[in-house]
Length: 95
Image 1 (cartoon, rainbow, N blue to C red):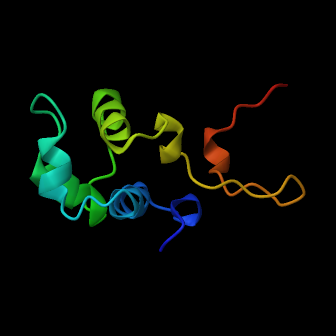
Image 2 (image 1 turned 180 degrees about the vertical axis):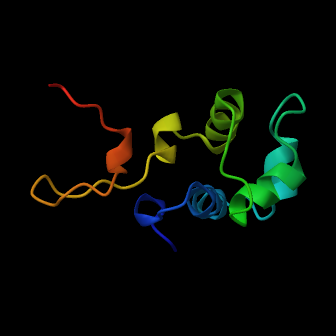
């Protein structure tokens, strides 16, 4: 079994959790999500890495269907002594 906490992409984390929960297909997962903002095709694209720009409502719906906190979408973080791999262009100068 893959440990979803070490997966780097959101699609890999969703797929690992889905399989761990015994949900065999993206269709099975999509069928448990109410509404129409998360379809089988959307889940397939997320898991394949073709879609990574999820709306907050999609993320919340997927997390709820998988029975996990929405925080599962955060990438794994390094130890405090390890330099961050977050983009430096996103940081603002405090000077």
